[in-house]
Length: 295
Image (cartoon, rainbow, N blue to C red):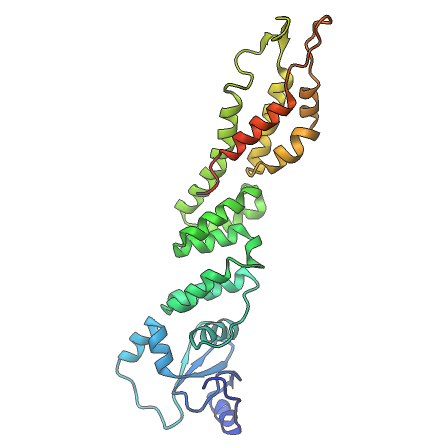
């Protein structure tokens, strides 16, 4: 078993190897020694590697030199000890390390892809959909689109609607995406902004020229307060396409909204309200709910 504690003889051999064996992978019965780039060594059975990794299966199918008894040669790998440990725990069916950052996820995905390990790939796919990794939608989107995980990519794109993806802080992540993934995400955000712009310029909302008539007394009115509110809604959807700040806060508290709901007919004998606040709020909410939600 890879989980046997490291015996004194193994410590001696580790010194001969020029490194230290990982305590969970130190069994002298194992016939392969893997070396991490920080000189941590891992003893593991070749059968485990051959049945879980296409890369190692191909490697062991080639003619091998006969190693000294109980002293196999070290296969040095590019990964650090934490990444290698996490992968080996997964393929050995041992309790795995929790994934707490996307730096770990990216390193493990790269290694799992390189060594053709579908088992760790499937486990990582499950783990990235759980806290604490769910609160980074762009990193999730990057990992999912790279690996071809469509459901996870759609979920991440929906979460990204709470972000302004054009902000400078998100540029390093977006630069790592392939062109198609970036375009899909940008189109989703743009289509929501342009979708609400188009709907607000259609019936039953006020449309047409800059001037119109009061529906009650037919006095000439200027719908500038409505135009200013529409512009504010569109601009808010540009920086936060989710729309929650529009319907939950903006349409009640924005100066443009307050001015719009207080707008009255300029005819002193009429002074009727120009806009039905409750109905307008319902219609705008319905418009936002009808916009595309995922890539």
